[in-house]
Picture 1 (cartoon, helix red, strand yellow):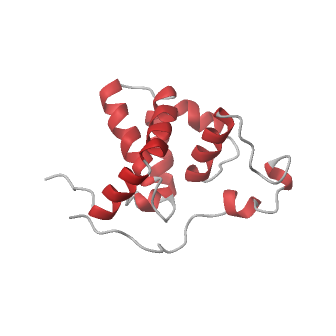
Picture 2: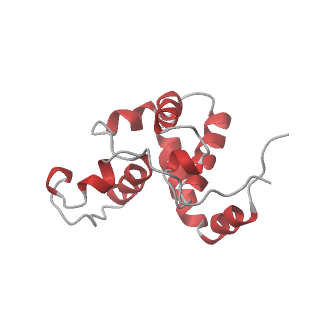
Length: 134
């Protein structure tokens, strides 16, 4: 039996439906593979982006490397765009901002930004909170 989303995840998804739709659209614009399967993966990733941990943790993957492999398989164009290896959740939201021509970063480039370590630092830390699967 497949895992079902916990009520908290469903509530977050309902409250932030526009955000999820934007993330799904971004992912599908860069998807490869069967459309129906890519749409399911995109929806899963988009809802996981609403979580509080690193994206790979919110997906309950073992590591960021597993998430990168998933992204490479389904969304290789986005992987190519993330050539500086920005954290995936931050990268996806940055792509949404750029798509809407919203530039909220404080620095003219990532290389000189005081938050560089937050966007590009290691992702091997402990989980803050992991929702149980019902």
